[in-house]
Image 1 (cartoon, one colour):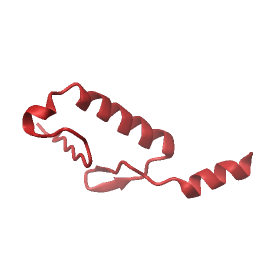
Image 2: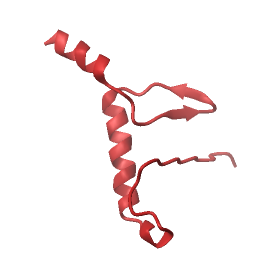
Image 3: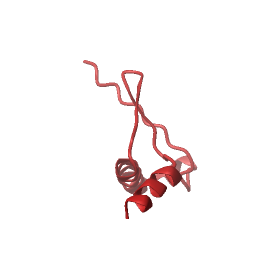
Length: 67
């Protein structure tokens, strides 16, 4: 069982990258999938086709949290 976990970690490729204050934050498979699916779910509720976007290939979100 432990070998399966190690193999899964080697085969895992991040789909999400996260930077906070220009510092790269490493995401594990669960967090990567959680963020990806949550953001995709929210975007699907937006009428993006009105802007000519019918499928999501690459998404970039930036949040400025300064006052």
